[in-house]
Length: 125
Image 1 (cartoon, rainbow, N blue to C red):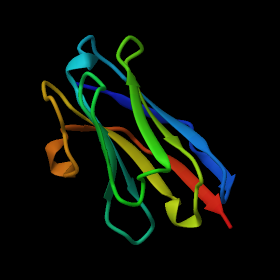
Image 2: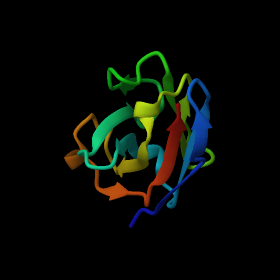
Image 3: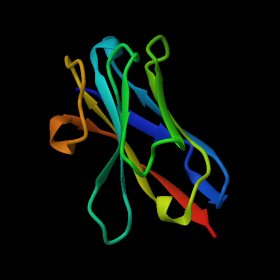
Image 4: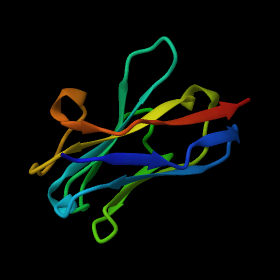
């Protein structure tokens, strides 16, 4: 069983920045492919970013490219999402997800086996 705990959400003005963190349990975090997803009120969950288990390769949704950066620190069992130039449309609950024993999880949420409880990000205009 893998437990994921997100933190770092909050209220920020448009143009501001936030850094989300996701701490994972277990001694094999370096074998987990990780991803970030978000869900806005009344909308379906959508992919934001993903990172391979070694951290060398990342992928992003078009809405996140150039503004968000996913990274990980395997020594700390933590994955991050640095969000810059935030827009009101980025308002959502952000979730991290893990796919154990996988090189890459991709953009399909169905590929991930474990999810955190989510952290709220609200961007005011």
